[in-house]
Image 1 (spheres, helix red, strand yellow):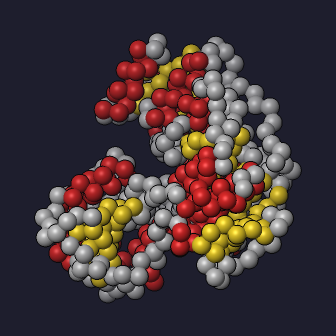
Image 2: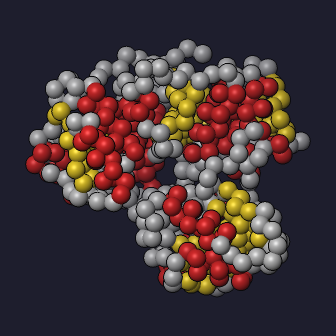
Image 3: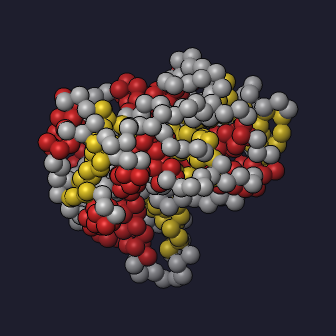
Length: 465
């Protein structure tokens, strides 16, 4: 396929003053890239935690000015460009002051994009982004190309941009927060998996959230290639006629151009001639939603030019990513599953549809704005709900009269013990919180690791498998 890449002007002129707000992995990489491109860099983070403190120390050792414990606002406002972490709320004081001062603000992904030579498959949507991004990179590599997964998945685009030898392709996960501050990101192939309400603790309404997702399509060209979910009318409507060629994926049957799950359970693709990939039962991933994710990933790779045998081999050898419907193991006949990445209602609803066994569901964390009553239609197999964290009172209120709900007021170890008491042999205990982690944990990964450690610490009558 032809590339939709256009010339990419540098994000700033050499000698410009560049502020980097946030010293997570993306902020550290952005500071390093901005300095390498001739910027006078000041990097800062409000946190004094181990991660930002270590990042600031590493940057200072390289001659880059960096500090933790706050932002020097006057210095930030004196900059020509601000590169902002997606984790910093647009309504925060520092973002408001930067905006009021008219200082140009971009995302780290925009900074990295300007120096990227690799071609890009960009993946966005409400749920399934990380798994699909990992699938795309894995299948491309299976097909003999060099590829990496980057963006919201953990590897910053700025880090790849600094490499002398860049991969053929980047599978780029884009969150709405990253898209909000992009200017010129126009992937060779863009994938929109699905849309449902999310981040209503940060957006004023769902339309604002969808508007940031739409930014993926704003710099489209006739050479752009778009992969859309034929089973999701909201996703189909979002591009609003953006330039490019459209392909579709569906778990409900054939599509004119794209990939689909047949009534016989076989995954197929039709670009010119129809080809078979594999039975969906050959996937190692749990749940029908992962059939959709696999169809989307395989379709993107087929558009790149990967052959059907390589696509089938790649899809069938991909294991679940940590914290995404990841089986932890089986304890006394009870399957424990870590779905800590499910930070919204729709992700938890998808998880619940993945099991035919009775489920003890662990919900909780910091509330994100959508009522938990929206989970009730998906709770036919729920034995009980264990609620914890800041959101516990709201969970109890929203689920009252629909399902037995117990509140645990202490930490994750106690939550796991209570769930074990409620579960029967043959059940699933599912951590799928439908909340952010920020009341108790710095991120969903730490929450998932704590859950796994608590599960493995349980006394057991037999082997833990």
